[in-house]
Image 1 (cartoon, protein in one colour):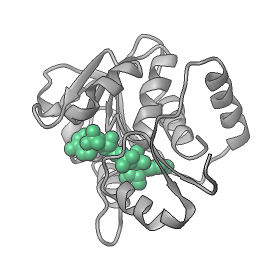
Image 2: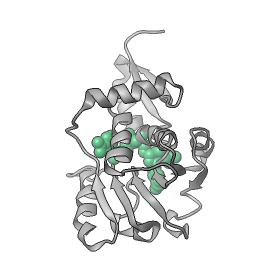
Image 3: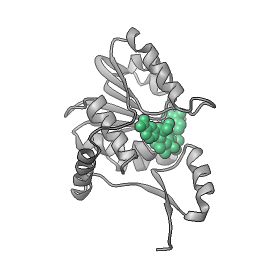
Image 4: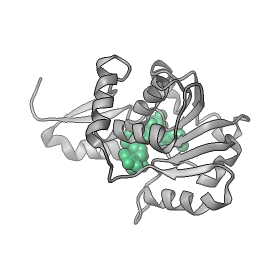
Length: 201
Ligand SMILES: NC(=O)c1ccc[n+]([C@@H]2O[C@H](COP(=O)([O-])OP(=O)(O)OC[C@H]3O[C@@H](n4cnc5c(N)ncnc54)[C@H](OP(=O)(O)O)[C@@H]3O)[C@@H](O)[C@H]2O)c1
């Protein structure tokens, strides 16, 4: 919650300025950040379209997405309609490519991207910001260090207590299995979060 859910919160609320009734596209909706982003967008009154692989379509729908897009069958750039906000967690396309998906007064928030050898996901983020002055919509990246963490965690805790937000846990590994846990996470297809635990429950 402190890392992934707070990232999703900042992307939607602070950088994305999501308002009740707006249409939001979450690219990378079934992973650690995405599963929180879909639920938070829904809790803030957004109409959510989630992008993920076929195995996770039902999960993303169950988290509150009105519409799900299987990226193995459909190119999200060809959806043919526009969103108020695109939150790109997977970083599967260059930032400028989202122009055709975003209303002129809409926003694009870059949260992550495929890891390159030297820059990791920051390469995608730098590229997105470099294109920003030439685009009609607003562009932001969500990145630490974060401010007002305590206030954000109280907000997230309240949503969890109210049943509007739940962590999705894919697998749990024992402490000694951390290398396997990291390898699995780095494959980039976890369903929600990967947990490391210190004792058998
Ligand atoms: N900016 C920040 O503060 C911050 C904080 C945390 C994380 N991040 C970054 O955010 C990114 C994601 O983190 P995460 O923890 O959510 O990763 P994750 O758990 O590995 O999730 C990645 C997601 O991307 C989806 N995906 C893979 N290929 C895709 C494609 N071509 N189109 C659409 N979706 C695709 C996967 O869905 P399927 O499994 O269904 O394929 C999966 O849901 C990373 O780059 C990470 O570094 C940034």
